[in-house]
Image (cartoon, rainbow, N blue to C red):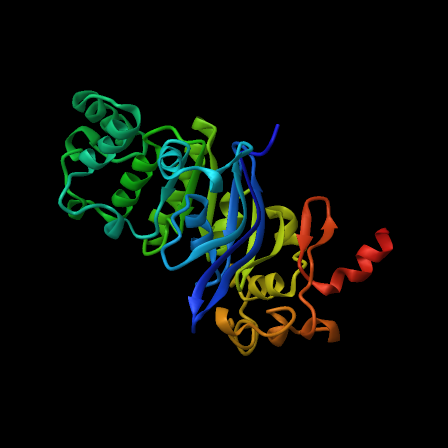
Length: 329
């Protein structure tokens, strides 16, 4: 039985200075039913564009240059426009980063949740409203029957995000994409939203693809994690394996920079990764991370590293593991 979602060789380009420039390169990933997968990386690394590509929503003039996106073996890139519209919401739901810009300010939250039910499931107005109340209650909006007629500005930030989750779940999708769902929320509300997503995953058998820049969020909620840098997946593995034994120098740098409770800060402050993320149109030759890497090899400035197997299900795109691969052979 194939994974619920399989992405292979996904490359997305945008025209920059008159030429197509890859902002996402050769991304390969999979999500099993019921799995909680985290895609983590710095702002601008290509995480959100990857999420939009899964629903064929890459904003123009960007385009999916090549690759494959399959939902239970069905190629989404080959679907006609009306066919992919039936996938959006019904099979794959998405929760965007900022609900205040995603929710329509002139319609009540109940209307907006019910609208997708009327479009995809052809429910009557009364039935859609009743289901909207049930969904708002399920995502723990207090007094859902009264709040169903509230407008987005009448809700708190956490309640708006819960309303967005209710909209994404309205048609019973198999996969929920959560794009930075806790950004701009205070720490307590962040924890509540993540707990809600995990509870819904268990109750509904959902798969969740969580897009985030926060390693602590990944450690708390995810089964597997993928680390992205400059448009590429540079490391993938189980959360336990990746946090206990990070393999890519970029992942190690990120984890070293995370403050930990009960551990005094190092003298001179937390470690940092030197340099800055390169612009998509000006990537260095070879490995994009090599100008910032403390373990750089001579080959790193000349060749783009392939993906190496580190352990069962744990991979890294780094030449440090060439010797490991040769010893396996």
